[in-house]
Length: 352
Ligand code: SAH
Image 1 (cartoon, rainbow, N blue to C red):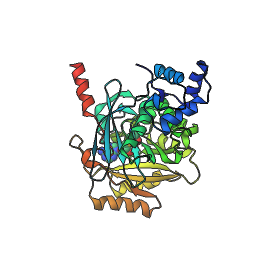
Image 2 (cartoon, rainbow, N blue to C red):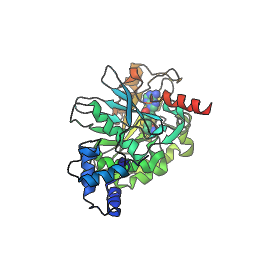
Image 3 (cartoon, rainbow, N blue to C red):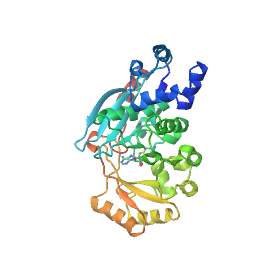
Image 4 (tube, helix red, strand yellow):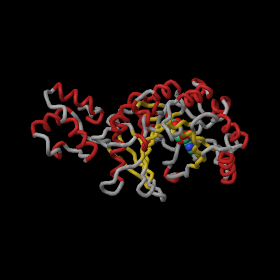
């Protein structure tokens, strides 16, 4: 199988061109064709010589991830399933908000973090996604939008832990931000992590670190967080908060702390109080996520009154606290509901 051209940054593409005695500016043209015009056939690259197109066709694959199927929720949320070259599957979600569409992309098949409230965790980690597989989800997302419209925001909040697949995640950011390609602004991209402290620190030093950082907090004491998110055994809540305090947050920007509301577990006013003191001194905002229930998960969603009360406590104590409106619930496309049954079936077929 030929290597995917979408695995290469523009710089890497220039390197390949140089090796083949082709002028480096061709990389820019290729980027425009692939990511701006979104062509899927070399023949469509009309400003490139036929011989060059042939050379490209012999060297790289331009095929996109195959969209196997998609479902649309009544609120307009679209979840689509894509088949990878090795037969595995991943899910991507498009959230429609007028012209503010957001794509929620995956970075791994499954996930190793084992967060107790998350369905993807039940798959375990199957493998990391390549940069190409991450980037192509964004290209594919636009096929669900009206002609010519581009997804406005990108959130790395689908299946998997982006910082566990650090290098490929960084490379995908480089490709998405490239001005000759999709030309995303870092303001429109958010990378969400369960709290891998060394990678948070490393990310702070990267050029692409201007992208927004979100931390899935979900617990306000080390004890509470450890029970919900095993990663906290490796990197304590204290270390996590320290890494956020040290994070070079741009002026007027804040780190988002996602906080899941689980009935009787994380939704007490006592927890809200602890959350306020925990975030003292951190440039932060809180995004509350009422738990999305699933028969395979034991937790419950708190009542609306309880949720409002929690949010109000934060607001009254000077915390910018928004509530994530749950979208795509009916089609299991909401937060923490992404898990691909097909992959599991294939797995058991292979091993049995
Ligand atoms: N691994 C990364 C990216 C996944 S984001 C991370 O942990 O940040 C997934 C987000 O959905 C997290 O903020 C998580 O707290 C939230 N989530 C997971 N399961 C959920 C569920 N069942 N209901 C609501 N939110 C959930």
